[in-house]
Image 1 (spheres, helix red, strand yellow):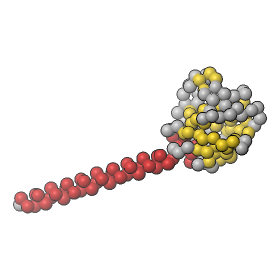
Image 2 (cartoon, helix red, strand yellow; image 1 turned 90 degrees about the vertical axis):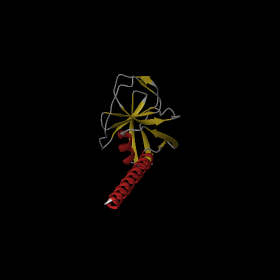
Image 3 (cartoon, one colour; image 1 turned 30 degrees about the horizontal axis):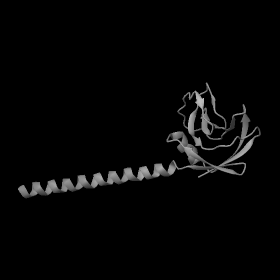
Image 4 (cartoon, one colour; image 1 turned 180 degrees about the horizontal axis):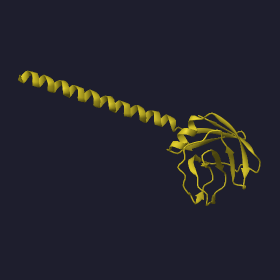
Length: 148
């Protein structure tokens, strides 16, 4: 009888250890997938190449999944380029109060905006990421290419 109890206890222990290691491996794989999803994005504007560093949020993930994209972006207010995309993205909007040059935001759920000048704002946005060292993009409409 004692031998049966010991055998059952050993079997239970093996099952517990096996399940725990399986869950651990799944968590590691999910982390690696998340890192891949949130890698930087290559942005090409007027023959200049930049890097868009994505935020760690659902909106940035969904945007990344739509790539590659080539978008004709319109000028607005001497400080931003925008385009209404065909796809709506998840939002988590907030009032940033201040926009930094290079911020890439979502206005509403489908208006992608690249800001090329810093300024104060009263509008709400969902942040997608930031482009460092962004040039002044001028007063004309532009074509922007986003690539993984």
